[in-house]
Every structure is written in C-alpha cells, then in structure tokens.
Image (cartoon, protein in one colour):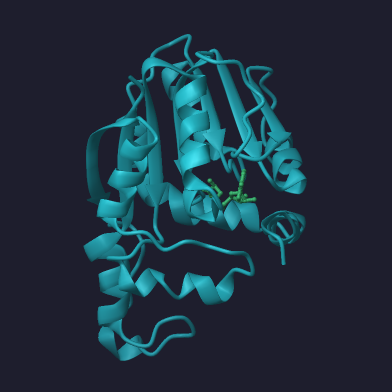
Length: 226
Ligand code: SAH
C-alpha cells in the first residue's frame, strides 16, 4: 500500500488521535526544547492530528503554523481539530515543500522522517526553506538501537527505513545541516503493567516493553541550518 493510502485509512477511522495520545508523552518534552519565539513560522512535516502546531500556537504564540501531510485525509482531519486561522493544514509531500526559500523559522517532525524515500532530498528541502540558524527537530520512535520498535514495520503497510543514531547524524550532515544535539527521550508516562500481566496482546515480556519505552523512547536529532 502507498503511505498516503495507509494514513488516509487511519485518519478515516480516527486513529490520528490515538497516535497523538501515544506520541505526546515524549513529543511535549521535545517541543518544549524548541527555540521557538512568539511570531515565528513553524512547519510540521507529517502532521497527523496537528497537535504539535496546536501546542506551539497555544504555548509559544507562533504566528503561523503549516502542517503538511502526504495523506490528504490526515491534513483535513487536522484542520477539523483547530479553529485558529494561524494554522494551515494541507496535503503535501516532504520531498517537495510548497514554500519559499528562507521562509520558515523552525521545522518539527514526529514519527515521520523514516517514511522518506529520499532522505537527503527531504533534508535539503528543509535546509532550503529554513532561515539561517533555524532548527529541524526530528523525533522518531522507530530506529535501529530501539530493537523493540522494529515490530512497527509489520504493522504499518508502507515502506519505512530503519536508521541508527549515527546514520541520522550523517544524513543531516550530508544535506548540509549542522547537528546541534542528539539524544533519546524516555517515555516515563506509558503504564507498564506488573510482570504477571505478560504476555499482553501487544507485548511478549515486560522487559521488552521497558526496553521500548523507558530505555529507548524517542530519538531526537536537532539540525541547524547554516
Ligand atoms: N506527527 C504525527 C503523525 C505521525 S504518523 C504524530 O506524531 O502523531 C506519520 C505521518 O506522516 C502520517 O500522517 C503520514 O501520512 C505522514 N507522512 C508519511 N510520509 C510522508 C511524506 N513523504 N510527506 C509528508 N507526510 C508524510
């Protein structure tokens, strides 16, 4: 299935809110670290329900938020979840950003980058639209070191690339972005049941669940445009 068809289906069945609830545990900690200032323009790639831009609008008073999603259904669902004119959601592919050079202060993306078929093109596009000194906050839960995250490949009917922490850094550098920082944000909020509850529907062992959430969580790589 194509990525857009897969996520059109998810949006039609209301799964964008489930993703939001699940990702919010670590996304909010990464968002709080973005050097966003009042009046800024922020781009969200693979916006899903649009929660990241809603949060930045409410907490940091961004002037303009642009949420792109290759799934048109997702983008229109995200529009339904907000009533502020400051946020625009549209169908669009992160390989070709419908934006002028130097027009965006910061870029956010959660659990999307590994869908890129040509990651360097995406990063070059990000670099093109960012103002000098602007940042790209790239958050992913699906990555090489987090072995228990690899299972997502079997659940999502769309091509996904499994990169390591070092590969993220070198992709950024190859596209001409500086790597300002990289770290992992553990999910301290998801409830992990006591050992007797395992296996659960989703998890074979408690250790596997601990590894996925408390040990590895979300990989955050922050790029800076020169
Ligand atoms: N950021 C949201 C959604 C993550 S799911 C969240 O944290 O919950 C990944 C999203 O990326 C999906 O909505 C999917 O349609 C979108 N996506 C995948 N490939 C894309 C691409 N090439 N360009 C833009 N969006 C893409």
